[in-house]
Structure formats: structure tokens, C-alpha cells
Figure 1 (cartoon, rainbow, N blue to C red):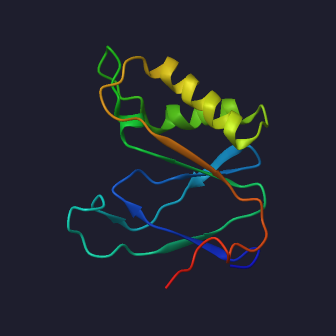
Figure 2: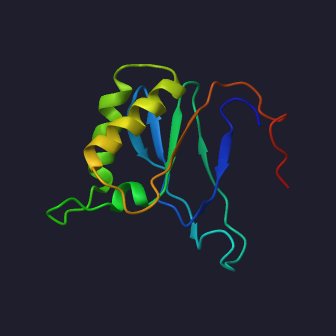
Length: 135
């Protein structure tokens, strides 16, 4: 795919990823949702978003936002976004940001009763044809 061309995504049972632009959450990347992989849903529908150089996409599992505190309140997407924005202000590389975010979320969420996985991707621009072949 060429610079500026939409990048495909598919969301198989996870919350919508967050688009981080200029070191703050710009929006959720909404797309067609399917059942988790392996549960017999039809092939996923592909949606697309045009990324700019330096954009980041944060993918995460529902266990990250569905954890409840001692008062029964869910951690939720708003608190996740606030945490991402606070960490992103440091303008570090994606590896350091993901590690710092993971530690901050663990502290803020307390105990974990479900999987809590995050995956931070940074688009650096340029052609990506050598990375994947889409059919």
C-alpha cells in the first residue's frame, strides 16, 4: 500500500482500537465486529482508515476495560483514553510507551480477573507491500 492509502482492519470480538495522532487519542477505529476467531463466524468484513506518518493504533482486549474496582465500577474506555493521553504526552518511542502504559494500567486497575492485553502499533510511513499480501 502506498503512503496515505487506507490500511485495512478487522475486529474479531475485541473493543475498537484507538487511533493516536499527535500524541493523543483522536478516535476509535470502528469497524464491523465479528465473533472471536475460531467461534464459527462468517469471514470478517474489512474496514479501512488512512494513517499518517507517526500515527499509532492501540489494540486491546476487553479485559483491560471491563475490570471492576472495589465499588463495582468498570475501568472503562474513558479512563483508558485518559491514561493513554497522559502517557503519550511524554512523546517516547512505541516500545517505551507501551511498557509505561502497561505499568500505569496495572496500577490504576488493581487486581486483574481477566486477560488484559495491549498492542501498540506505530505507522512510520512508506510502502508496506513487502509486509503482507491481501487477497
